[in-house]
Length: 82
Length: 344
View 1 (cartoon, chains in turn brown, red):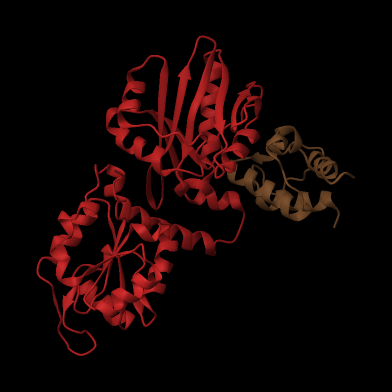
View 2 (view 1 turned 135 degrees about the vertical axis):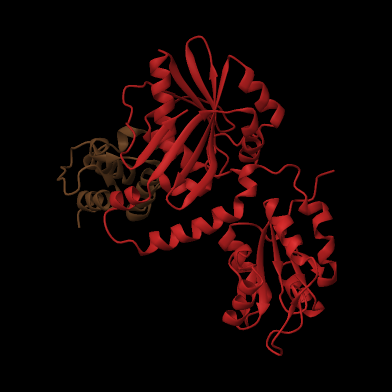
């Protein structure tokens, strides 16, 4: 599975989405998709760290890195120096 | 001198301790005189009870029900395992340390076995049971409403977890089925003991780890330069009690969030984000900027993540892990439909 697919799957499984069955693209803002609460945010960070073997540092904790699937993919690539 | 830590749970043996006689050997055992009152007294102070006994589970529970005591014991361990194992398991179920446990048993060998595995557990001979209400470590400095309800909250939580583990289906549907109510209000005098307790007991979901005394908190509620918010939560299983606290300092041009914490009891419910949304709305309404303190305590990364996902950004930091964040209030998430948010 590609990183984008993995992230998309994680989000659709764990986010309390407003509209069950809604389709979302890799550039759609996840904050428009469901209520992004703190447990979800924490799970997402843990998922990214474990799945892609990176460390999300304090300085990386900026919402801009996590608003869309593509942003997360870019962030992970940057971290891995790809 | 530091005060010895308060005991949070008393673990009882049954045969020869809670009652006279050996259940497996005779038809009728009798409760030790006054033991029921001892249990009730401690329960009303917010001290929990449990059991570590070598007995047949069903027989023993049946007997406890007969005595009207079954509801008082959380996670009773009745079986044939070592009591040190029972106590280790209990500590993890209740999420407490062994030094907050008192173990009472008439058999010195059992007490030694527990002591050898858990040197921090306070062990007492069964003959001492009547002295428990006067024991200094069983006399909390103050008893909050939340403490009085503690056992019932644990019982509700056990049921909640069982149902959650067995639930299959969309997350939102499950959350909606809980019928959660989240109540935000200005702290009043009667909330301050619990507020003090929260600042002292909450580590992981605490933005600064600063503790505040009753007197500190009291000055905040009468100060026009501060707002102290307290949050309460309940759902169809019962009340979680007072579970959140926020201290806002009101300056000329800004709201400054000095303290923000949530009890671990509600960690999985996402209400921290709801309270942040409320504070953001209030700041916007008052046409002020919103800043917040964060101090990395090594245990509270979750709060840093919570801030980040609510669109807070670091603007200042020093070498000792203190950060000031600011929120430009451009994006504020509304409340989710599955939580009924009330502001009083």
